[in-house]
Each structure stands twice: as C-alpha cells, then as structure tokens.
Length: 306
Image (cartoon, rainbow, N blue to C red; front, side, top):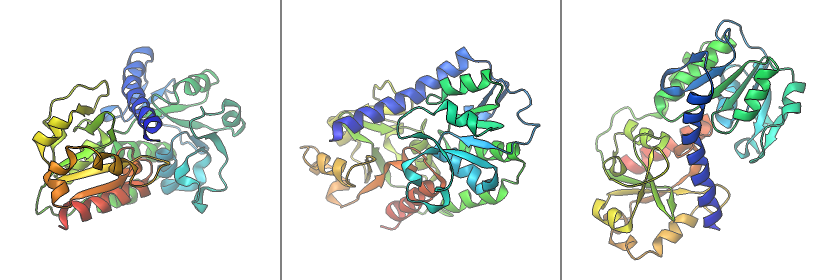
C-alpha cells in the first residue's frame, strides 16, 4: 500500500521542481513575486484591475481567497481537504482528485482570474490565456512565499491581507527555549528528508529546529530533498524524528514500516520515545491554512513540550 503513495509523492515533488524550470524557460511572465511565489502569464494589467470572479485550481489558493473575501470565489478545485468542510460545499468544482482541471467548466463560470499551480495547471492555464482570461501560476515552498502570495492575492481582489498575515504569525512560536536535532522522514523507500529549500524544511527553520537534513549530503532528483541511507540516519542520530503519514492511508502506516527496519531501534529518538507522526498536508504540502495551523500546533507540542 505504501509503494503507490511513495511513487506518487515522488512524482508530485519532482513535477514541482521541473515546473520551476519550464515556467522560467517556456513562458515570459509579466509580473513576478519574490521567490517565484507567483507568476502571471499574458496579463499585463493583472495588478491594476480588481478581480471579482476567481477560480482557484489548488487547495491553498482556494483557502486564501476564501479567507480574504469568499464573495470573489466562483469555482474551486475538488480537494479532499474540503470534502467535509461545509464552508466549501456550494462552490462548483472544476477538478476532482488527480484529474486535470476541466476547461469547459472553468470557462462556463466566466472568471476574470484563474489561479493555478506551477507544474500542475500549466496546460489549462495556457489555454485560458489564449482565450483572453487572466491567469496566475503560483508556487509556495517557504513561509516567506506564503506571505508574499497572500499579499499578491489580496492585491488582485482589492482587500487588506493584514488580518490573515497576522493569523499566520500566531501559528509560529513566540519564544523557542530549546532546539532539538530533528529529522523529518517523508518516505521509507527511498528514505527521503527535506532540507531547507522546501516548505517542510523552511517550516522547521521557523521553529528553530536543527534540521539534520540541511547538513546531510545525499543525492536526490528532487530539489529541496535528500535521499538518505540507513547508515546516514544512524550517523545523524536525531533527538526527534517526525514521520509523515501519506494521504489516504492509516496514520501509522509509514511509522509501522520504519519499525521493521533494523536501524530503527538504534536511534536516540526511538529509545527516548520522541518519534511523532504528522499529516502530509500542512507539513510537506501546505495544503490549506487550517492544515498549516494544525501542523504548526503539533510542532510546538512535539518539539518543545518534552
């Protein structure tokens, strides 16, 4: 059950990496936000015309627009994060699961702005541009890029982003009294861990956790991640281990798999019972504002209350 998820996660992470390259080389952005947070395409007046009908193709941008001004939202992605959330039940879905966005459904909603994710929405975004519809491609891989994206979207729909930015700050710790050595493991075959050039790695830095993957050397085709051997994990010997639970599986599936590995019981985090399981959304993929808040709350508890 783990292997299909691991393959899909690797594919998703790799596509995000590749998208940063293809966007830069194949398109000529008219406006750009710091750290490649957002790239607008074929929309020279993007920042000067207020958007009133917005379609979002990612769960994170859906949530940000909803929190900023839900009246501007006319169509959303069919994310599992919103499946049981009554706040999003009445919005038309333009995509479901891993299926690409439906161009006809998007056009039928008569949007004046469609917000996609680099690497996942490129094809439909290009078609929408050809139809004269304003578009924005986004990518969030750091806390700074989350803040910059929020400011950009607020500017586009003409609202004040400060209340939401203030809410973000409440997710972070006020004062850090200790900084445990930490290793975050997102898969077991291969053993994959984020360094500082990823959302997860950057989030650990915000909590001043000593992310061991930042200094460990490892080969990986995925920017922001390193592939580790069991020997490297033993050598690092973290005080705290965070294990990510894959979407759609039991909370302890990956942890149970690690427990079967010979090296696992040799680690001080294991011996001291400082191994914690996290959801994929919020920590590896920001997913939504609520998911980020939950991940931050758990980081506060697990890193500093022991």
